[in-house]
Length: 226
View 1 (cartoon, rainbow, N blue to C red):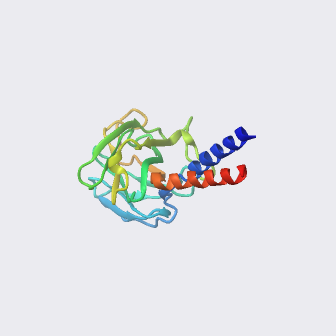
View 2 (view 1 turned 120 degrees about the horizontal axis):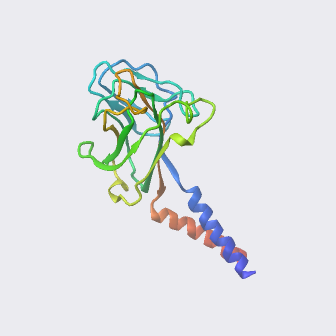
View 3 (view 1 turned 45 degrees about the vertical axis):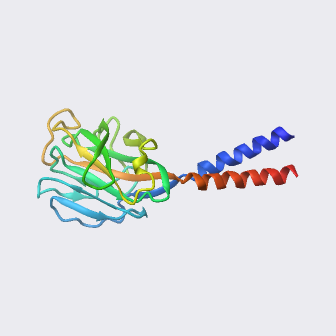
């Protein structure tokens, strides 16, 4: 019986840890209204949590739109892509460590293919984290539809080893176009688009909080044993 109680206690701690994962902020873009054309968009608030999202382009003719998302009614899209143009999101991670990130991204056939993900704590100096290729929003993998999320388009990043992002007043994530190659392998066109959806920053509470969860489970175990 003692082994059974110990196993039960371990499962309680594991369950508490799993449930403790927190969404710091999530942008689904469902509440974004009409955005005028221009080089920069800022101040897009997340549907969950707090923060600010947007993007920056060289072209003043950039159209910022909200077409269908990946399993949702809206996503955030832009055309007129050039090397160095980017999406950017800012959050606070105060009280959290082991930061994680996930988002859905796709491009039209003439939209940009090559992107890099970087981070910053001052909004000025960005550290490269990863580079990747964006899938075209067309058959056989796409297109995006509002009724169903297609995980083939999901980008994930584990920043748990980047302690500079732990418990930080401000953290910036930047998704930057790095080439003129389109998603179909040609050249990016002025009308080519890239879109994001479900941009989610996650974490777990500070270790002290996790310790309290473990102690609570241990206390339950002791009461059962007594």
